[in-house]
Image (cartoon, rainbow, N blue to C red; front, side, top):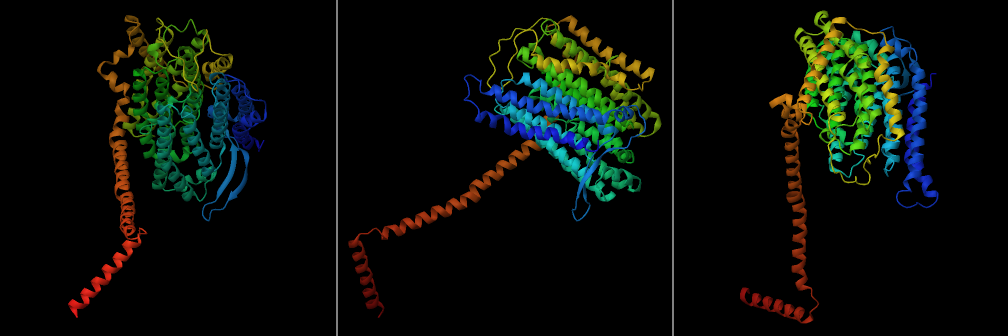
Length: 637
């Protein structure tokens, strides 16, 4: 079993390597391509097998590693001894880098989440992108992403973890920009890459501060040295780490990339931006939780960021018309819930909600993919009445929305309320300052009501009312095709049905940590938000219930103009500076080079006049010179 973490990481990596090379290599050696897309079918089929089988094997290994320790962690029991080994040490001249991979209670839980969601997405994508000519590279990048995320989860050294952390960012860029022909998609990919890289600068320096203070980058050694570190060192390191957490987990102020990243294929939204990559930031805080607990000012900052992020993102979700952007802002809000639980001092509650959220949010995104396939549009204003046409998707998405709202017996009820209990306890335990604890708990309760409102709005506008007839052109080659019929292909429905099970029942796998008063309050608030939206919808089913926001609807729809603020303060000044640099380079630097060339050409043209091959001109010049010399000699003699 000591090699299981290594095998779990290597299998998807080998699948990515083979997926990029083998399908098309074998196809070139095979028979000639047939007409009308027949050439791509064998290639895509081979790529699907190469992607699914290694991911399935890695899933089995992850489940084996998590069996027992993972449930013990979620139940708050004692930590188990890690399983794994060290494969060598890189001598750096300073602090060495230990090539350690190991699975413990926390990494066991996250390993199962990553592999199960990745496997579901790989299977779902077979039907979703069955005619896409770039499916082999798409599936290979998913395998590479899976390997990188597992490296983050199972790494026993912070710098080894950082390698997987950065490869995830690269895969995110490649997958968001899968349909790069659309300029909006390529811009979204670049934005996600740059914003997350900005946070990663602070994250890397935070790793350096912890490693230098501990004399080792091994996670176990760093945590063992935390009691000996000065408060200034811990606050500096954890504040820097929070920059990377904010970038990867889309928290304020680096959250703006996630809604735009919905430009990528819907399965990628489920894999990276709902269940796995965005979980990495929360996982890091949980992995280094003793260091954060010893840095109380950092927890106060985390609490304020989480409070503002969860409520602001929920209000933004309430005003969106794009179904995927609703789920994107919902993800930002739910991740802020987890960050709030960590700030309140409960890592087990945060990880529990991370797992349940991964299940029900991946389910919601995959269901959204089925709906978008069927309708041919992301906009809820062009949907309606789909419960009769998509009965399986309707049931599955209802379960997902119930879990998102925290309604019993769905899994989100148990995990969300465990977070609320932790935040309620922070008001009395003194882990946070009074103002931070009060702000966190008040925003969390308000977010419960707003979550009930936007989830109910999306559910009603998608599946109820009258269908809106929209004449849609056939999609361009390379984009998702519209599925005709009552339901999506079986390869898309099977992952949806399987994810609906943990989204509904996962809460019963863990011993509940609920307080009756807090649980009742949260359910009442969620139903209150849902009831208000339902009342507005019943008045006029054709109108958008978001009109209840009144004059605040536009600010909420624009996500409180944070993107516009960044554009005014950062993007436009940088673009203006870039244009100035280009102008100086063109007119000054290149102008000097071009001017020297023109001068040389002018001088050479003047010299060319005297070297034209005309003998008479040469003799005339010679005589004129002699005449001038004679005249000069006579005059000045």
